[in-house]
Image 1 (cartoon, rainbow, N blue to C red):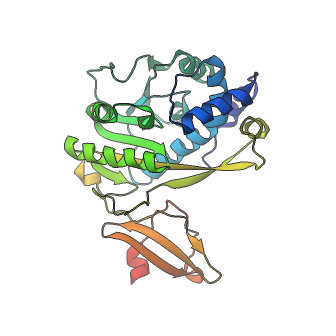
Image 2: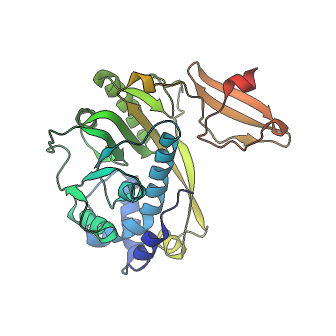
Image 3: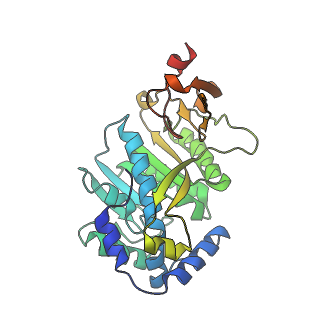
Length: 301
């Protein structure tokens, strides 16, 4: 449902080189939080190894948004990389603009999407645009920034309506989401998805994240040295709105449901904290998944 389009996969399948070795180096640096600008061959490996997951997550977040709200009219994609968001919006009537400092990332972006999309080749710290955008989108970017606070403030200053932030589904990624919530409040934005709480109710060493299953083709499996035809991408995300009227109450399943023989157990984030629901399987007409909304009134009645 959220998978990278076949025409993109076909283009990536034509890429040649020692991709496995380059991807291993990228992965190692990422785990050690040594964020370096990728060279040309590393970008090729990154596109094959990471785009199926980043695209799927971005597409997932957009689809969740569209279940509640009308699509934004224009967007600034900060740290656009190889163009996952641009691909996800191709069939939408949206004016798309990218901000990306890496020449090699931009080359891959244009290889996949052509030359007609507007791209600012600039660092976020020095970037200035007097224009304010209907939406600003930032995916897998804040975690790589040294001065996260100033970057987050700039992100909110560039939007007059929506801000989308996606981070890795790790404690560090979740911490960036919490930092974004604090700055959003200062800037007059409200969290609207996946929750509408100002303060996260999770405690101790727990963190809010979600998971999506990504199918792997043969080259994808080879570059990652994997044996399974899929991988589970963990991510954290938050969507903010400048409009308080968008701040609706949400009850989101924030952990993988526990399936039993006669019932299922759901941990749900609500306005009143985390609530655990135990529901008979015979009463669930449509299967509920991690990240779905659930009707508390129905099940608490």
